Amino acid sequence: MSRIILLGATGFIGSNLLNELKKYDYEIIVMVHKKNLKINFPHFSGNILIPQNLNSILKKDDIVINLIGQISNNHKNFIQTNILGSINLLDSCYKKKVKKVIYLSSINVYGENSKHASLETDFLKPQSFYGRIKMLSEEIYKSYAHTHGMNVTILRLSNVFGPNKKLGFIANLINSLNDKKIKNIAYNNGHQYRDLLFIDDAVTGIISAIKNSKNGFNIYNISTGKRYSVKKIIEIIEKLSTKKVNVKFSNEIPDEKCIWANFTKARNKLNFLPSITLKDGIFLILEKL
Image (cartoon, rainbow, N blue to C red; front, top):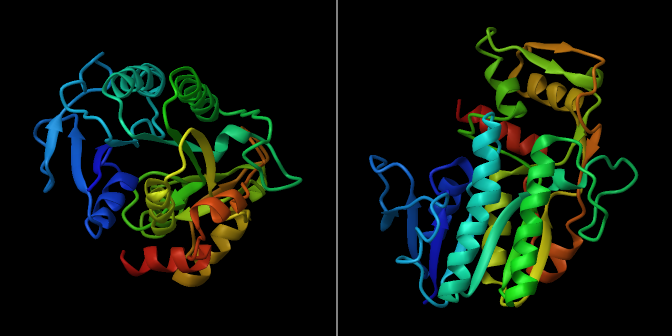
């Protein structure tokens, strides 16, 4: 039985992944940063910002999944957890000869692409701060994989949404249905296009990567291959809820007009296939409000 060390299990993606992993025959150990957090899994207190902090926990043939370092408004913390944290984690994983390291990245590393859904082989040209840091983090994992012969898998996820997610533009749009104090700005007059992945499909993609036995360095898009404008998303929310979203349209374009990704490689190599449409996903969120 493989042992999984899960970092970032208390976040939105992590908590959903943890619930699904309970169905499988894995020994799961969770790293928690705050000692007062209550979690019903074997866990330990750790901090990837401290060098060698994980050395006493990791064992040979562990599968380490790093979900730490998702979107944050604190740029300093975001840089530290993604860059310094990755170096510390990979140093420990190499020393302990872990079986595989899985790192959650983002399709935001591709940057602007309106012509075709981005492929793993495409040149990376992110415009956003988030996308640039994720791109730099990927380079660190790639370097360790090639220099030390480590098995590293990078998953580039689309914009993940779903019930109980507190952050993100879909969450803000839906929350504004009942709280008019929440103000949303639809940039480019609502014509920003994004690839949107329901949380259940994101979890399926991660578990598919855990099961995959291919060694070496691998990158997969965990996405839908479809793009929706913010204007269309608003229309779907308003139609399903029969309420008005509190939104102001602006002609400003602060970042990429279009980000979407092709998941053919993940489908062929990981048997990954997203199954929940944007409309169905929004309906499931509204149903649980």
